[in-house]
Length: 188
Image (cartoon, rainbow, N blue to C red; front, side, top):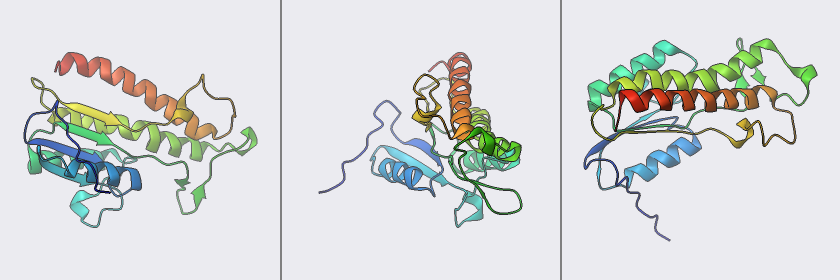
């Protein structure tokens, strides 16, 4: 079965897109789908594990995000579509090792909570901060961000995964407030 082509019909012909997290499975699939759109003008695939250092981005490091936005502007001009497909349930610990998702309150650690918020909430918000500056103000532009259902406060029936759930819930609130502001600064 042949893959269907994607069409971002609401964006202008020759639109330019950036996918953050394109070295991951979901981000790579999103970038691959966008690449099938005959209306696409240019696509920049950024990720933490990008082979080309110019395409690397670390959402836990604001200077890395700012540099990636500056490089995207130099390569593409204005960006019509930003898709953020980043995040992680298991977080690398400073000094090596991995913070696993907490299954009980007794397993909460401040460093793990801070790392969850840095990657899953602050990182995407900072990406929007920097990349929205290179998006058109007077024509249609889109931002898509991957969150998670476990970020829902109302839908949490199982508990556990405290840091990840809290970070995704914070991400949802950051996205909502960013959308309100961007609606004013980027009316289209």
